[in-house]
Image (cartoon, rainbow, N blue to C red; front, side, top):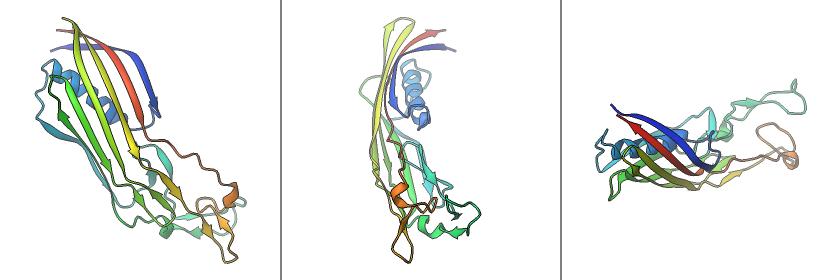
Length: 203
């Protein structure tokens, strides 16, 4: 059994610790284990597959939170005011699907990753579909040490939110019933990362 100790030489990303760390860590682990012979992966395989129809929270392609999926809300100006049902505004018109797959490269420890997210299609929230591409490679530095490089990014997934409109034509945020002009959401960006790791392996 091999013991692995890794030192992170460089970790560069957007939303590194809040978004899709599973995929990010999985491909590095699979690459190292393949290179050291601890596993013999098939030519292609899937690591993530999911379907959503009634999520409690809306997230972007890399798992970072966009907003809650409320059934009802009250005014942000007066928490004791009338509660309004907004569930229909955020009901998905089609289910959301996400898949991430991997293909072995030409060399041992080399992995190509491809993913797809169908996005969100609701009356007041739309997130475009997006695609993931990644590349991971492990190589020997010495007989007892390895070097790993992993790079990946989601592409697409633009977020668009629409206001609620009252009978007087005034626009409001459906999340808080505050004036649309005062509503300034800070949407998360899709995950992009570059990791460099130096690894010692002991038998």
